[in-house]
Image (cartoon, rainbow, N blue to C red; front, side):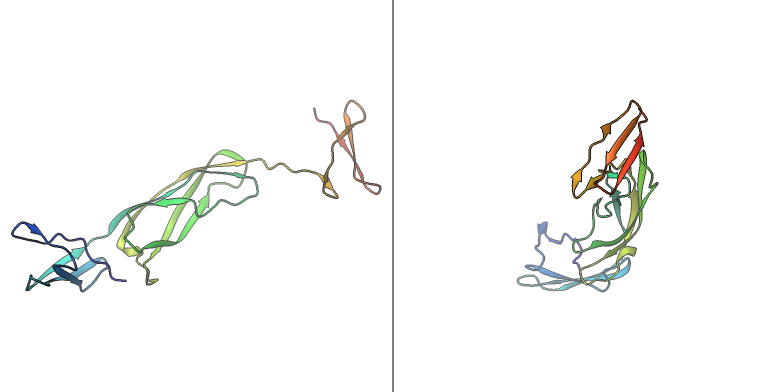
Length: 178
């Protein structure tokens, strides 16, 4: 996919319109040297050729804060990216949690982005990428004890012992910690 460079073409202080008053062709659309050719159309005649250097575009990829339950995985699609060229998308991204333990002070680090264009070509080298981390909170996961899809409630038998009946064949005795 060839993108047209953003140009402003003027004749006698009159701004011309791309694809109405002129066309633009580039020999290269990636970072590096390119030759730009502007050719007049309609009432504008002639050709103008200029050598240019295409420099990488600065972008930021910013991880988004997440709160998950212990044992769950972080959502790797939660990030924002600004200033990608039209048609370019992030196709891969490494997302790394700082921990997999219960915490209120974890972080999500992102790196190793791969950016592709509409023709599925790797154009990552056309960008200077800055990555920004986000906070990660991992909460305790609560489990319900069930039997035949019914939640069991503990029955107090003594001051410090709780008994739970799990049907006719199973039972458990749990020491009360509080």
